[in-house]
Image 1 (cartoon, helix red, strand yellow):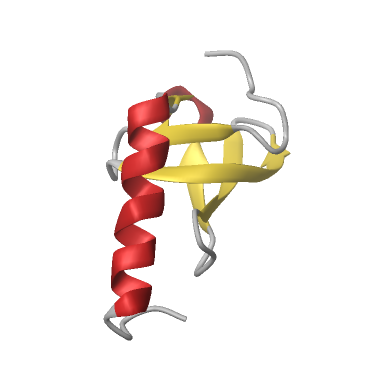
Image 2 (image 1 turned 45 degrees about the vertical axis):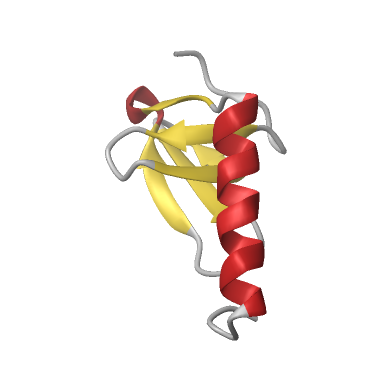
Length: 72
């Protein structure tokens, strides 16, 4: 996969997590989870564009956790 543009959403296939690309350096991406939280690094080769379903699922999971008081 070519390096995704900043601000795009990708699926980290090694961690099965959706994140927003906030930085890129060489073959590494810095991802921020939907809803905020701890950033993590992902190899460019382990990332693919997130589907609409994956983005909605991640956003729903965050909102549900926030409603239970588990997320800020």
